[in-house]
Length: 112
Image (tube, rainbow, N blue to C red):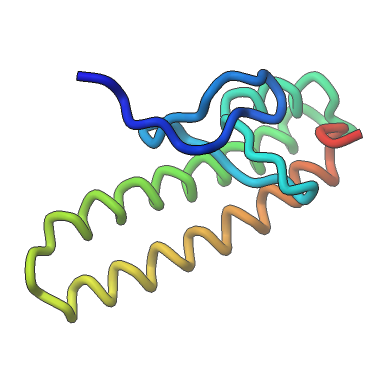
């Protein structure tokens, strides 16, 4: 069985992005694999490795939450109340991941 592919390619490595991979959107609208973002951020950090790792670990947690909420929504069946709550918590995780992605960009040379 083939993996479902998104319409995007990674802005850092150029490879396709699949739905089962963690990915995020940069401020320049590029879509990137989390693993590529992490690798470049660690290499170009303008702060200590401990500091950038705190932000990267937090971003990874939020991206994982998005995946989990999407999986749970698909299992919620016809229960609209549960679906709505999960959709809201997923949107919160998306907002948090955007905030953390911007912070990674600020603390490293991802987009420069």
